Image (cartoon, rainbow over all chains, first blue to last red; front, side):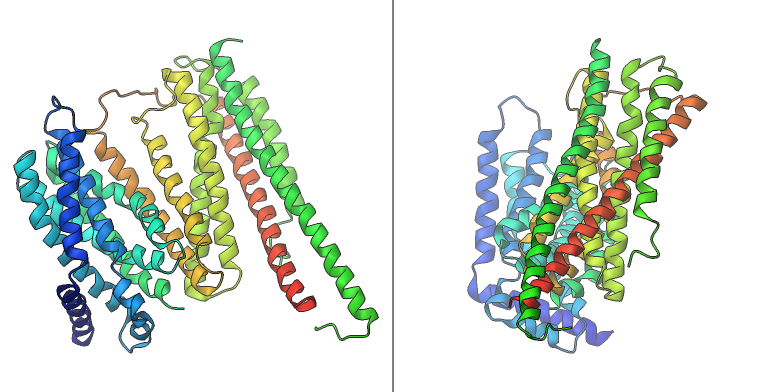
Length: 213
Length: 56
Length: 228
């Protein structure tokens, strides 16, 4: 068990270190989410209340994470390293978990910028909304790591990832928006928890089938 | 026909049309498969006539 | 290979007979609905089609599961055909549902019908299945990735349904309702016969398509042997 977690930690650390050195994905995500929020200001008519803004926050988060996920497996692909990892004696699901944790770190970094910007530009965020963001991010990264690996195996890569990811992201958006604007946020937070549990387990179990030749 | 009758007819009609389209597609596929098997049989016959072993 | 499966001729004949009985029962036996009038008859074709689509996706997921756990050769085509049939019937569900919505409420689409919205999400999901499948080189990798995707599909069904239910809290103010079938015995009987007919029809279509795909694969293999 500790060997497994050791592998996961090593893999996640590798991704973070690579990103710190190359610095190409994270700045792009930060800039993208800010630019998107500005675009939304111009996209919203003047007299709508706060609610549409919360909806758009979630659109921004989902599409920003797509940006990050599209590059999630690029380091492995470019170095031809994925085959090496797969052949290594560790459990292949550790690869998925390491990648999920690393993606989560990147997404969290983007959110640290995006959320204050949102509060500044649009509307306040309460504890429920923030809890929703946390839970949703876990779901996005769990499903996203798996789905991104699927897309990486295909010819259409960048085009395919949003197509596969978006239908799966719809429940996340419902949960996130609900936790922000509904009168009963607990329902939506519980739902996000359910989504995370179901799809994290599925992704964890299915990863090895996606990635082996 | 009343409006309601038209919609009911449309719903059942759409179902019928979908199934018939499927029949057309399968029929096309079947003709193609027929043509290909014919070609392969001819190929096999020439091989047999030439006295070559036909893997099997 | 087809020895243990029930004869296709028998099934197709049965489906035809059931369809004939169903039409007779729907239009001549089942009484007209007091509230909705004649347009309620669409229910007899729309709901079985929806249930059949779910069944096809379920079948595809089951075959996908078998593929991943047993590595049997046949499951890939069976799963793929299941998804294909499910998508066809899913599209039909959306179209008949839209017609029913127009007949009942005067609009071609409404976000307040949970089933319609669910099918829209599923339709998007399974359309992406084909895009995914055809952008990967044929081989065991493609089979496995398709299988995982099909399994994700069935997990998505209950989760999406729940999400759509929750979303109705804040998404759409205009709620259309249809008085749930206070079905008489005759209506229920007509529904069951129609459901049986459509399910059987879908299964016959599935078997025919599967035979076509397998023959295609066999021919390709033959061709490689005879004309390398």
